[in-house]
Image 1: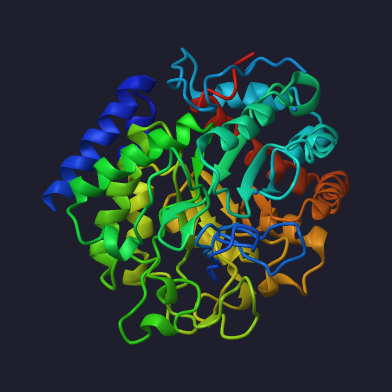
Image 2 (image 1 turned 120 degrees about the vertical axis):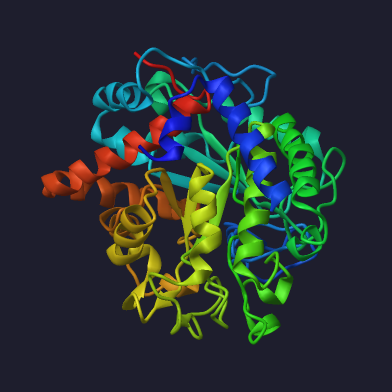
Length: 442
């Protein structure tokens, strides 16, 4: 049994405490175009307003990157704030029972996360979430008016969860809060977060303390998932010529070992504040020049291998039981030539799940507006990711959700093997939600 598996079977409150304690003791010992305006698209995903794409690999200074009663009936307490509940059954058994009661439409919906742009009405996704049984929402477009406005929106989103519309499951409500050019939520109640390069100037313990404070702010605003930290390493020989990361100081350093330490410190702080973390952009986009959000050129990494030292920060996050791993859309000629990483079984299953032993939730970078995948039919962006071993498809454009949802359900109907793959993915998502207090065992 891996160390992470041992921790996973501890009672929930103890598990959180142990992980934070271990992470802090270890650390102590030891794709994107920013836009300063609130309306312009920004960091972790692209807004749905027709402006230039921007995803979790596209920063923005204010940045964009964004269902009746329920068993997880929301209150004024932000989503994800409850301490994960321990049960007498293993989480996987609980998740399996929940998934067994879900129909195909509900299962497909849990594998989609949609963007809610700052400029859109907070009710604009209501019908989409209900009809497509969606599992998650990401706030995009640069929410710069403080905690109160964000909390009003997340409270509304929480209230959309119901047995009928979301199979009784609460929503994953995400934001991109890396710091520097990629900080989606700003204003009163949110600290101004420095870039990763500046965060790296302190000690790991300093970063854990800061990340705990930032997590508390997210939790107060009703956010339960942070699409951070960045685990990419940009070599000094590339530096700011790296479009998605180096140009905006989104990497901690050019040393993968140091990055691993700081990634662990950031995760520990988020976990102390009861926020799920996401390491990105697997298997690393620090060696390319093109930004996958805005171009399909210069996005092939000709160096990274399956034993590359630049995988070290990702391995560290996995060993720290990070809740999600985001796979990027660059290509890797020495792993799976010509195939975007998120569509590659060699990357998602063989490398991430098998070689690095990651059994948690895998999410895409934005595939709704990203130029790197523009030549792939919209529905296939979801089905190919699932076939590769992935789980949640993130799309910044709500208009793509029905197409993706229909593609998943049709593939399930056509291919029993694909339906089994979907069941595996949904079980992982529900397992995560159960540990976050967003799902209950039948």
